[in-house]
Length: 74
Image (cartoon, rainbow, N blue to C red; front, top):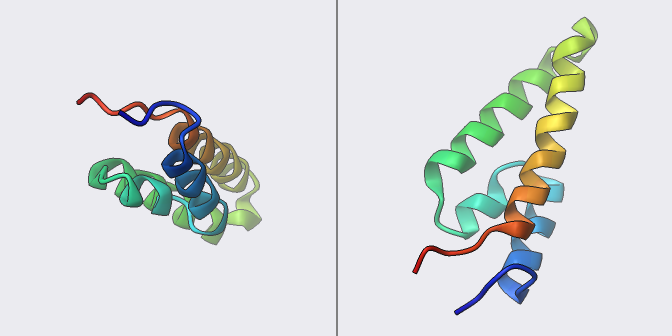
């Protein structure tokens, strides 16, 4: 059973560094992947409004941490 800090979680966290939500997709969590990706893409697209950009950065970091700390329920 792969737990927190496993090789899979490290790979998933690294995937999220480049594309938010990709790590969750690698872990098989499709809804979380879509949510992280959409929030980050919209936030980064609206960076000139400042607040959406800040929210996108926070959610992007959250996606990385979430992938790194994920524990499978099996």
